[in-house]
Length: 56
Image (cartoon, rainbow, N blue to C red):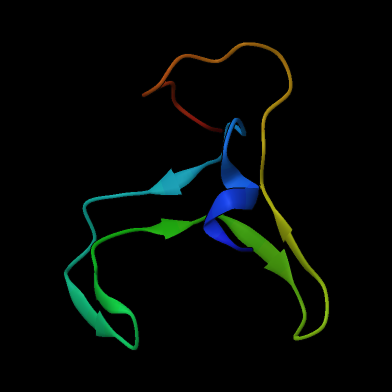
């Protein structure tokens, strides 16, 4: 997704990963998502989770 499409969404981020050089720059985390090369779905929350809540 484009960065502006993420504004206001609560997404799941896998953080504190080993830094890796990507086309756009240095990455130290990933958005949790799934799908194929044509359809990508971001993992989001419903309700009101707090930043740092555990996902299980």
